Length: 527
Image (cartoon, rainbow, N blue to C red):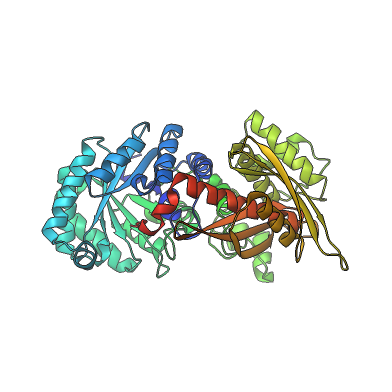
C-alpha cells in the first residue's frame, strides 16, 4: 500500500475525550481501554497531557510502558517545561510521539495569549525544535486553525515543517467550519506551502455544529492523511470526530475514496461498549454504527427488503463492526464452547486465565436469569476484566437489603478498605429505599462527605430478570474545589447496582485526590 493510500487513525479518547466533563478515568481504566485500542489497531494513541497533573503523567507513562504495537503520543504546549515533562512520560514507549501546539488565530493570539503573530510563530518553531531534540516523531498543531488568516496559517505550517515536524495537524478547535470551507483550507495549504509533502497532514474536528465527521471526510478528499478522533465521538463540548463513523465511511465508500485504514472494524462495538461501561455514559440509540438501533429495522417495508437481501436497507454488514446476528440461546446449561464461540463472534479473544475469571461471572448471572444476551456478555467481559484489574480503595464484600410495604428499608453493607490493611467494616442503616439505605451504610463506613447528585437506571436487556446498570454523579468539596465524578454499578438487583455505583464513584474520587489530577480540571486544553 502506498503511503498516501492509508489514513492514519490517531485516537484521542484518552486525552481530548477523557477531559470532557464527567468522562475522567483513572489509570487502571485508561490501561484497560488502551489495551482495547491496541486490539482495534489504531495507529496512534494520544494517552494524555502529561504536564497537566500527576495522574495524567502517570497514565501516559504506564501506557507508554505497556503498549508496544501502537504509537503513544503526549500533548504539550509550546514551551520547554511541557515538552520536557511529556518526554519524561513517553521515553519508555516503543513508538513515542510528542504533540505540541500553539494558537494561530488572531482572536486567540490577541485575547488569550496576549502576544503578536511574530511571538507565536517563534514559539511554534522553538517548540518543534525542542521536541525534535528527543524524537523525530513530532506533531505540531496550530490551534483554532479554521478561524485563522490563511496566509499566516500557511506560514506557520511551513516553518513548523522546516523545524522538523513530521505531522501537521489542522484543528477545527471550536467546530466552526463547514465541509466545503474545510476542503478549501486543506487544499490551500497543499497549494501554498512548498514543503507540505515533507509532512503528513492531519485534521482534528470538533462537533459543535454536528459536522465533525463530514469535515474530516472533506479533509481526506483534499489530501489529509491522518484523522484525529475518539470512540463514540466523546470530547470537549459536543465532542470530536467519531472514529467508528469516519472509519466505516472509508470502508463502505472505498469506491469513492480509494483509501483504507488499519482498523480491525470487528473490534468497534467492543470498544464502544467498554467505553460506555467505564464512563457510565451511553450513546443515543440512533447513533451511527454503534447505537442500539443502527442495525435495527421496525418498518414492514424495510423488514421485507432486508429479509430478501440485506443490502436493500443495510449498507454495512453488522458483523463488520462486531455485532453478532447469531440466535444461539445462552443460559445456565451452556458449555464453554458455545459461550466462547459467541464471544469470538462479538470480537473478544480471551486468554486462559481471563476465560476462567469470565466464567465465574457468567455462571453467577446465568443462575439468576433464564437467557444471557450479547449485551450481557459484553458487560460481563468488562466486569470480569475490571474487577481483576482494579486496585482501588474500597471493595464491597457483601450487601444485604430488607424492604417491604410496611417496614422501613434497611441495608447491611460490608466493605474492605485496601488503603487500611484490607480491614473489613460493616454498617447497618435505614433509608427511603434500598439504594438510600445502602448509600447511608457506605457513608457510615467510609466517613465520606460526598453527595449523590444524579441517579440513572438502564436495563441492559429486556425482561424482569434483566441486568441493570446504574450510573450516578457524585460530588465532593475538596480543598476549595467541587470534584464531580461518574460511578457505575451492574447487578440483577437495582438496589445492589446502585450501591456498587456509589462505591465506584468514591473510588474515583479517591483516585483524583491521591493522584493530584483534581488540580488540573480547570486547565484542560482541547485542540
